Amino acid sequence: MTLLTEDQPCRFSAPDSPVASMEQYPVDSEHKEDCLDTMEASVFGAVEPPRRSRGRLIMHGTAMFGREFCYAVEAAFVTPVLLSVGLPRRLYSLVWLISPVLGFILQPVIGSASDYCRSSWGRRRPYILLLGILMLVGMTLFLNGDAVTTAVISDRNLKRTWAIVVVMFGVVLFDFAADFIDGPIKAYLFDVCSHRDKERGLHYHALLTGLGGACGYLIGAMDWGHSALGFILGSEYQVIYFFSSLTWGIFLTTHLFSIPEKPLMKEPSSDSCPSTSLLPEGPLHNGYGSVCKEPVALSDVRERTFSVLSEANAVTPSAKQPNSEVQKRMTLKSLLSAMVSMPSHYRCLCVTHLLGWTAFLCNMLFFTDFMGQIVYKGNPYAEHNSTAYTTYERGVEVGCWGLCINAVSSALYSYVQRLLLPYIGLKGLYFLGYFMFGLGTGLIGLFPNIVATLTLCCVFGVMSSTLYTIPFNLISEYHKAEEEQRKLGGDGVASEGRGTGMDCAALTCMVQLAQVIVGAGLGALVNLAGSVIVVVLSASTVSLIGCLFIAIFM
Image (tube, rainbow, N blue to C red; front, side):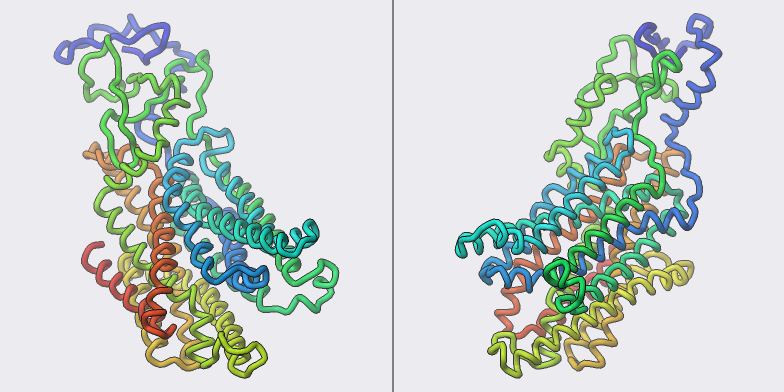
């Protein structure tokens, strides 16, 4: 029996008949070892990647620093910018809902597309580069939309309309790309690192995420309007844009060149190794993350045996036409079907992630308003020259410093996680993060004073670091266990055909869904309760529910 080629089809004997001779199927001895090595890699899976240095892992994590830096700038300036261009209040919810709705629908497509991308630059980096450019374009329109429309359009009413359109489009585009890019970044880390390096890399991600957020909030807290840079560039928003675009451009480039990424399927020439020109696409059965495949038409092959060589020689029409197969894989219907049929432990992880992000966003999106109205007892609807409004503004400024404390504590807690991991494990860390956040936000809501609130902002960082690391560590553990099961010949039906891009995308979908829930429901809840204090109490309640879910179902 020989490896299958187009010129010489392989004939299999009956399952119960012995193989008489191998001489009638000669193999070129010059390339036999290369062919067998390639075949073995394709059948048994890729060899574990080499150990990565600390510098490489930090370079890989710089994308998270730049992304969180830009996120912090958006969080600090989105309301002032939208107010300055005259956006009606009734459209605020529309701005916050468009991006997560699009993300929830399209995120699985991006994740699966990156799983099967055959670019010579690798599977993940082309998508990271594209989404990074979209982030930069969105930030450009968001922070410079008013200035551009003012310079181009002279009519006041027309300028106001176009300024609202441009700024809203920039906010939605930035949120869309910044939310999407997290999945490919995590999948890129999983593809190029060993299991131990994945854990180290996720910790560096959490560290740099916290530092990036802290730097972004600090840049936003400074008064650049009266500085020399503000005079040169034109306004405070242009200065912020200059720092943000420079930071994102440098760190995105550093990230893209951090660790080499191998292409998904680099087909060798037929002369050097004819048997490997058709790489196996996997077993015939379908599982989570795969799509329904057409029956394999092999007239000369009887029932598939348990022989590894038979698996390696199985040829499907899609093997000769990989592009059409990729198109079949990436249909929205098949991807949604794959997510619905995910294994129970992945489904529990997604529900837990949804509860965590819902609680976290409940608190973070309205925290500065809570500080201004509840802690400082200001009034955002008072006259702008009144004491009540000035007090509210002061509370918002202190709230920004509280968010900076959150970012710093997130970076520090990423190291505490590494110390606690051997003692309480991933599930313990997951439970601890949710419990501390639920307890802390509950105390803030029950006892709202300045010192206690700023002190308890540390628990926000604990939750942030937990949400950015533990779920993806669990994904890595699940994949490692499934890979070991496949190597031992276990029944891995549910895991075949699934990629890390799909799993990371499923988690990111929960973030989008949490934004939809918070954006659509929290405003009505505040109006019903008549006080912003319900925000932190809701965050505490949802987080504690997440604790129970982790303890019972994870």
